[in-house]
Amino acid sequence: MPLLLREVNNIRWWDSQRNLGEEWLKEGELRSDALKSLRSKDNKVSVFLIEDDASNLDRILAAFAASRQELNDVDFAIVDFEDVKPLGLELRDDDADTPDSTVNAWHRDIVHLSATKVLALANYLQSKAHFCRRRERHIHKLIMEGIAAGHIDKGLMRTELLKELA
Image (cartoon, rainbow, N blue to C red; front, side):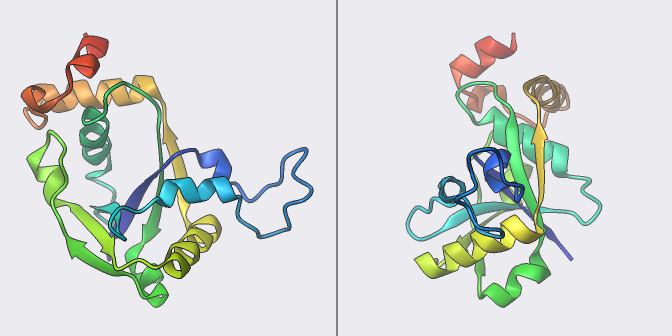
């Protein structure tokens, strides 16, 4: 049963615990800023398939981060695909544009998204997803390992990121 990975902008926005000054936010309600993480383009949202044992997680994170302009922390959510099926989400094969061709094949788009489905996905993520953050230094290590292993094509990386990695 595959898992889905979705990058999120900030895992703190997804925390169900209320912070000081957030008394206005009712228990179980989602912060509106969390929806920035599910911004769609052409009514679709990008995800990656992760093996059940998460054996390909680091490679996905390295490839994803290697396609950025600069080195940063990576925040992401992981959910079981079978658990989101009742939301009526449709996955479509669609290669990504990372510097790792194998990772690109693990990419999918959630397509035909309505605002109602995006909100349902957001509520589901807040209540059921496993949120993680990989720090910049760990991402740096993963990218360098991907380059050394020949998985990541440096020629497809942005110059700014390559300078930062050096």
